[in-house]
Every structure is written in structure tokens, then in C-alpha cells.
Length: 221
Image (tube, rainbow, N blue to C red):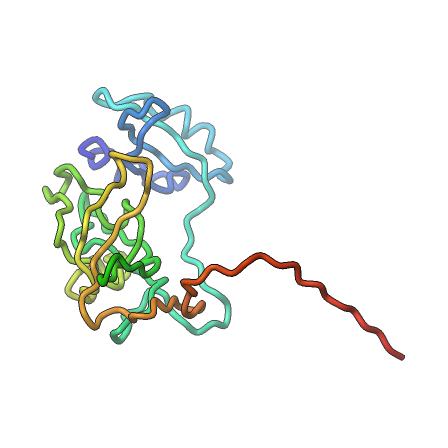
């Protein structure tokens, strides 16, 4: 993370560089990942000029499309706006302290799960608790940390512009296992108890047996 902080601003002055991340290489060793625009005419030259390692940390490249915020045409429903509680899921959200190295982040509050009588928001590990070592802001994700809606990236990096809808509950996930998930216990009254998802609605908790649907085509004159 220190290496990422050191080089990101300079590297991203090149339009071909879309972003950086702390990742792992094929051997499971921490590495600095650099995302390069696959459509850029000079992508190859930029990649050749990147160092193979910095201060003992490997540098790996991923070619990718440009990152774009997508919207469903004509839906009229914003997935990044602050909602009136209880909120629907499928919305922007994340760890309230996900701000370091001059950048803030966010992700998606995915779905509602229930363990016993307690309801939780399910999202990705990297959205709720990826900071497990002190980084640019010196803060480590800890049980009980606020999970907000919308995410910091959609409220000008200011947590006070969002609302707390859950509290972090760290479970068995990355990097100790191969599961990229994390949970937050719902703050009472802040999330719809039926787990409704924006533009989808309520997901059934029942399993339906498979069947074949046969369509009949008719024509007339």
C-alpha cells in the first residue's frame, strides 16, 4: 500500500493507466496491480516502461476496458443516491472509513441474509473490510465499523453525507479463505426486512423445481 501511494498519482497522469490496486500474484505474494486501457494505441509502450518491481514489490499489469458507471436507460432509478430508510439493496455502499492515499472507494450492498433471527447485508470482502493492515490513513477494518449508504465514492468522500445502515461483522473470508464476501449487521429500521433489491424487487427464499416451458406459436390470416 505504501508503494501504491508513492506511484499512483504520477502513473495516472498517463491516460493509458486507468488505476492501481493492491493484489496478489500467481504465487499468492502481494503485488502492485496496474490497470491499463486495452484499447489505447500506446498501451504496449506504457507497459514496457513500467518497472517489474518497486522496493521489492512485484508490479503486474492487467489490460482492461475503461471503467464506466453504467445506468439502465430510462429506468429513472438511481443506485447511487441516498435513500429514505428503510433502504432497498443493490445500491451503492461500503465501509465508512474506506478513504486512504487520497482516494475513496465504494461498492454494492448486495443482498439481505438472515442467520437465526438476525439480518445482515451481504457484500464483498473488498467492499466492507479489505483494509486489514494499516494503510495511508492508518485505519484497519474492525468489527462494529459503520457500513454506509451510499458509498464514499458517491458522497464526495465524506461519510457524514451518507447514512449508517449496518455494522461490520468480520467472518471467514479473504485472505484466510477463498471467499470474497463480508457481512454487516443491519441497523434496526434502516434496511427493508424483505430484502428488496432496486429494480428487481423481493427475492424468493424458496427453491423452485426445474421445469420445461413450452411455447406455442399461432398464426392467422
